[in-house]
Image 1 (cartoon, rainbow, N blue to C red):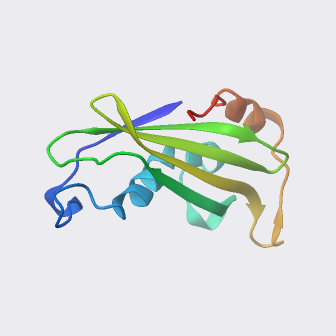
Image 2 (cartoon, rainbow, N blue to C red):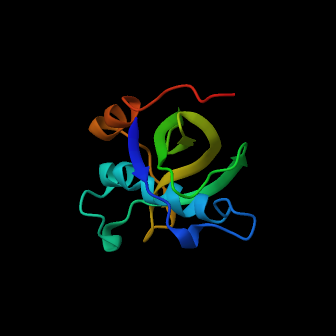
Image 3 (cartoon, rainbow, N blue to C red):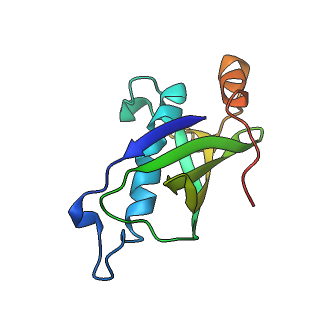
Length: 133
């Protein structure tokens, strides 16, 4: 599991006084950088090996300005060429938001999915765990 701490900025809030729901997908993407480095260590987009197939976010509770948010990132499924990244946004230890993103290893020149094998598969397997319900 990878973890990142986000310190919300004032501009992350909305008129209702909580963190705007548009911020979660951006924070989840930022927190996936550790996972992206397994595929492209230098994050060079000219050598990018991933493609997003699906993203969903469940908003379970409000998040607030002035308090850090912990983003936990791990895999909840590992297939042949695709995998599901599960992410939790927690504030004060409480699960507030849950995201699932399906990514696949992809050859952008050949326009096709590529199997996940060898050391990369072993690295990804070390981040597999069950997602909360």
